[in-house]
Image 1: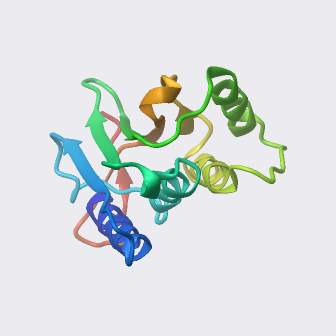
Image 2: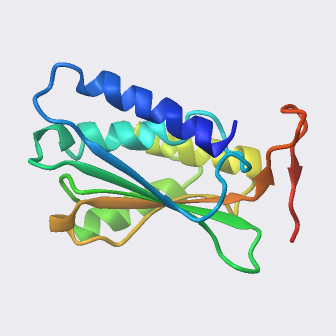
Length: 166
């Protein structure tokens, strides 16, 4: 699925979640690449946004925001997708614990299931250099993660994906 399609599904989810609530969440996408030309696993963004809503209590913030930055580093074969929200953050030690949970392949967690599931699916599909990392964020400024993916371009035949090796 293209990144553009995944963002559209995430926007629809966000609209449904906020139905009947008094405020709306500002979702911003910041990128210089054509996101209709790059692919990612289906339902990779929605669980991250859901975590922001539920665990970050975004629906209770005065001006809730989710910012998604998508970029390709020059000379790299990787996409970097940073997702940051201005909801309730985590203390530094909890951020470190969450990164440990994500890096532990054998852990079965009762908490952070959505985040761990996205990370494990990315690793299973693309390999171990890819996945999700919790970004060091000031807890008063919200919560952020980085998703690293290999560069896949959308081909004319939607079932035929090829990796760009640079």
